[in-house]
Image 1 (cartoon, rainbow, N blue to C red):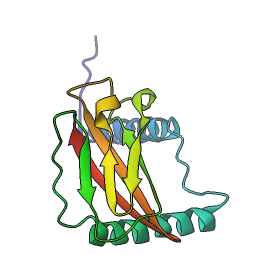
Image 2: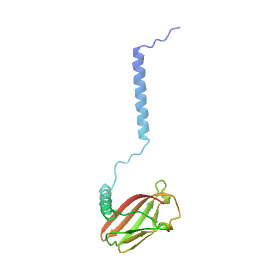
Image 3: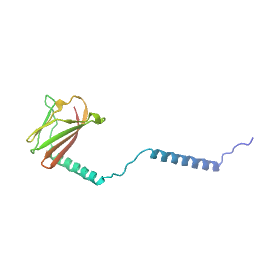
Image 4: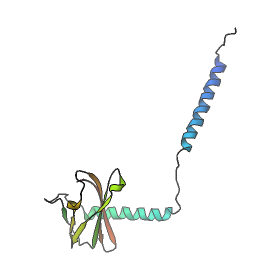
Length: 147
């Protein structure tokens, strides 16, 4: 019986074959993901994103220096430097969007009260998005909050 001899030619052939198989497998894995890198209305999305950036900048000036402390009922009141026309607050759950909700907000002149006492879930981490509207301008504050 003839003994198989492993020489450098077989080594190169085996290395190249393994490399090609690895590349084919890598291409297969990348084709399994659906990468959407374009949008039909990218211009409108960019304008909306720019509006959010402006609102966050304005929010930093409006809500700057506000201390987040709750009263005995769990509600939170701010005294803002300007009179606001309206406000809304969204609570976004960090894991499951089915728990996202609107938080009731009460405002009078420049006093803003977030009604956390009406929230049934306790000891939960939220991302708070607080929007205060002054005329045409929106002031947006995003903050993590545990309630």
